[in-house]
Amino acid sequence: MSLVKLTIKGISYSQTQNGAYALILNEVDGDRKLPIVIGAFEAQSIAIALEKEIKPPRPLTHDLFKNFADRFDIVVKQVIIHKLVDGVFYSSIICERDKIEEIIDARTSDAIALALRFSAPIFTYKNILDKAGIYLNINPSDAEKSDEDSDDILSTPETFGLEDDAVVIPADSYSGYSLKELYEKLEGAVQNEDYEKAAKIRDEISKKES
Image 1 (cartoon, rainbow, N blue to C red):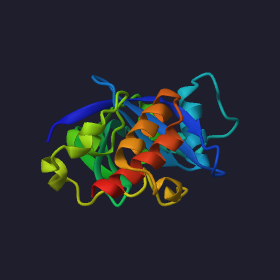
Image 2: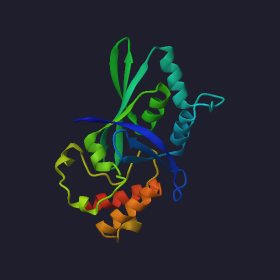
Image 3: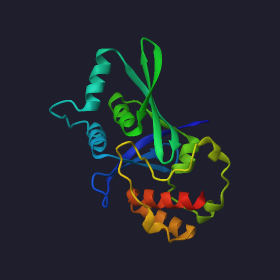
């Protein structure tokens, strides 16, 4: 399976769920976006890492990990979002010490917070982006496309980015719409950069297509 490099577009605050944030990842060589719902602490940690001029008075948890790793010559080489099961994104942190590589399992939000501090690249597999990515230009006819690649993913996502402490965003309000109407609403949400809404609509589309 081929890897796709991602960059961070930004963090969108939920207008409907207190404490919920949508972390928006961009495909480097394409127009798709990958929204992942994360908690407030992880959102704050990622935002601080993005704003390099902001220095908290005491180290945050991810800063402490970075200091610990630096002290013992551990380097984070890259982060890979490698699996999507029941709406949960699973990630691995690829580390190196004394030229020995180790793979550490991590929540995606934590992995990305650390990747930023180590200036490490973020990747996902093409089949995950094909399944969970949001296109800028939505074509309703895509609803008829084949699911040939879906075997690489253990199950269809029900809610984007549900981490252990993430906030569940219900999609019941969209259950009465047809696929065509949902794709139209998804395109509008993406154009307005309302990625929390887009994630909910995409969740409902996934349910209807499964």
